[in-house]
Image (tube, rainbow, N blue to C red; front, side, top):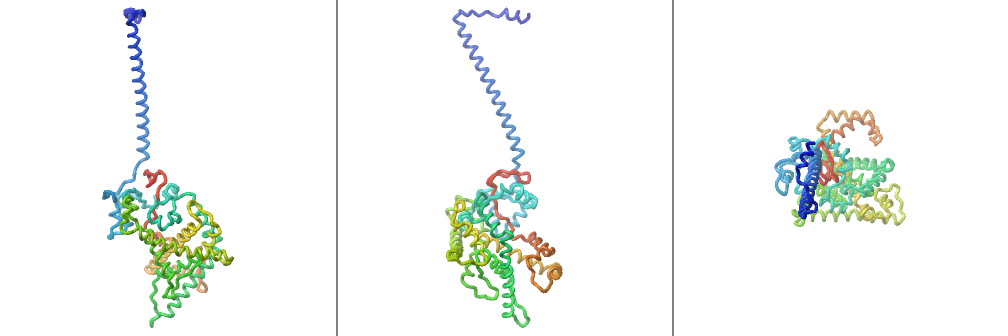
Length: 437
């Protein structure tokens, strides 16, 4: 009743009145304005809610690892790593003491993540193995690695998987290692025999001869790997006057190891690459050309032998690669490039790391006589003094295995692991790692 009473007091509209059109337009305008304001308000509320949820989710998942201080504009932290007063891994170790096992630095224009604990390394190489399995495109990788065709430098993908499969089946499988065990055994016997001949020739009144063990380990390791991969033997302990090819190989392989570990200015600051500061790229091209000529000579020799029908009792890896590839391209690379790049990667990568580990192990044993004595006693018990140690004895030499593992723990062949590049966003140690790091 109250509503009716109120309504009866309102003026009645005369629909025949010409002014009624103005009332109608005003009502429609008011209705449209009301609907517009309502729509905009609802849309704004939804958009704001979505942005808030997105921000909260990113805030939870985008916890960034701490960045080390003292970075300079453009070059980042390079000035801390390139000084001669302290090795880079010592500098990074000191940073890890301050910032924790996971932190970031800037290498020129690139952000880099430093991992310095076994827990974080395990998470990086197991949980996030696929995300962190690729390699950055560095200048050394391009020139020394046949434009990233070399196994250790190539990015993760179908080509990388195919090359790894070939290496695993044709060189590192149990069957292939069994076929090549005589090569390894004969090289050890020959090297020890040459060492004895050197002693016979150069011993003084005291019966002593000075031997550079690092070089002896290097010659032995290179001979073993060269015979397994390319069927070559260049180095001898008893022959001081090496042939030119042996000297050339030794020099080129050393230059390869040295140059592949350097960080060029163009890697850190790409827009300065055209300047070639320090002539780094020129040196890389020269070494790559010389290394390729050595591999090309080996490849042509193997191809001539194959075409002539000459049969080897034990095929080396280059022979196997010729048969497996059979002139077919692999990825974007021709068969010869894949063959040379893979063989050189195995030779250089396998020799230098082994030499470093053997040299450190010998040094540690000589400085820890009790450990040396225990190792000798184990050999006397498990092997005896009537024969040489063979590969079947390794499983029984528990103490010797522990010595090798402790040597690798204390003095890894490379103080810094090879750089990797994240191909997708992931989380490491609770921190968000962006693609491209």
